[in-house]
Length: 94
Image (cartoon, rainbow, N blue to C red):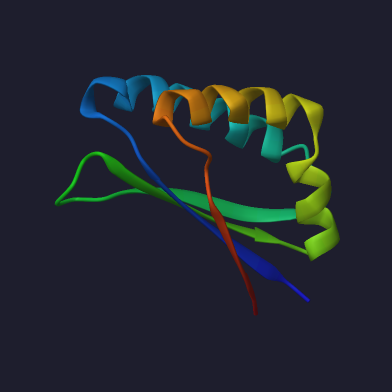
């Protein structure tokens, strides 16, 4: 069963560039992760402080392996610090 992960983030305008760099690091690592199919990062037009990431995974197990990847958790901690709260994930099946 393919799954989609939706991640919405709000970041102060002063930190948008730093968040963008961190998300690019995450994306580069994701490309090496087994089970990763595709992903896209969207920037909200009417609110530049909000972004959304939609990623597709072969299975929930593949996603969970990615979530627990030590390199990912290190970068994700930087993202959460920048945001001022933990990132929330919504998981959907297709």
